[in-house]
Image 1: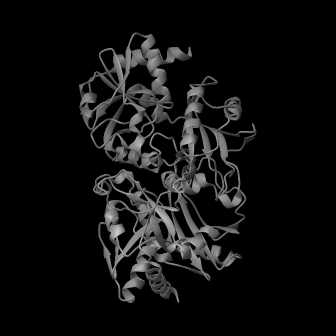
Image 2: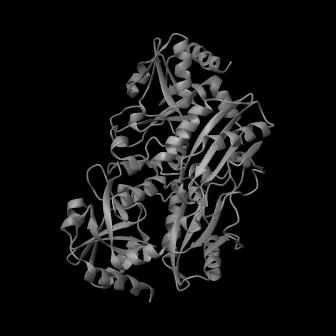
Image 3: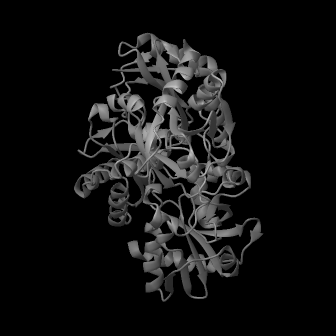
Length: 282
Length: 282
């Protein structure tokens, strides 16, 4: 099951080609995107996702996306979805065909199924590995052309890191900076819990501000937790009571094993935080 | 003028959409490419480009490209080209549509015009700026998942760096590593000449082995130059008799100004090295 809609509200057959060979999103990974969770007909955190899409577009000098147009396309995907009650909706926004063509950006919303593996990992938890990202904490601020913290279509490295995790028998990655700081995963935020306090690293390190992480933080604070944005080391992760990865598709998924070492059982913590997160959409 | 051909030898209208919205080359920048210079019906260094395409594909765990198929597609583009005698031919190879689809890689060759700006810069030279790339020299070997030295479709950062150069009144970029070492440009190799010796940094730093740089080296050695692969600092560039950028589209283009400082006039050196390079295709 797939649904494809354009910003003018038209819906198209997703198996039909709709993008030119000359599109810079394809030729150069030159564009930005978001992945939104849709559950029971409601897109979660659409406002936060669109805010981040605007911010990513600004970092890439792309024309400012129109929230009205994106909401219309998103609504079309949701209204035409005939699959499971829960699915992933990508918002794709590229620089369009090359300059010789003088064309406008390419923009569409695409509904996609969530894999059974991803669904079962939500309840069973995952093994993760740490991998060097090779950047130092001050770089993002100093070198904006590196687009650290923009959600671009240039995700080849993110995908290669996930394949490396797979080779090591794990399902996800926690990237580290040159000083050993915890960053994020290729498609997830990292959240560590110690006692009744949640920790996640700051976006100034060149990582994405997580939409699901933000929603988990709101829920956790309502449930009496304290939520902090602070730099973390890998040792901090081992010293915590629970390590989680958060994304639209993963929701809040427990990391039960890190670099082959079993972490403390955080099943109960996971239940409590997941309930707090879900309460935001009840 | 554009020509589009697929690996089975069919030619298509380049303005017609031919790629699905679900293609991972588009959604994730998950693929590899080459840009080949075609002059008077002959693709330059096609063998080196195909070798590098195979190497990039291997680094991304993509199925090994078939040289026979790529040569067929390239021939179709060349035979159907009706534009200027000189053009750029891109070879694009993506992971194809997402796994749910079970489809094969997406692969095509695309003939594109070279911009008048690029052509005039070949004779007039360019201003370039140095920009931090944020990686240290040993990283590429230690962290293969970062795909340093693979020519992937994830070029958003490369394009952002070129926009940053434009903002600074320059046409190209020379990236530097964290220790100040010269790396490469977003789409070019860097060559420095001192006396009768050429220098370019080693691929082990996580940069592409340049096809045009290799051709310039062959020509220069035939013309009596010595050609070395060595680490360079930015100070080395200032101390040289000439700094050049090399790529299929740029050929060998002189850098007349670096970070706003005028470099020694290397016009004569440029004429001599360009003649040596062109002699390889006479």
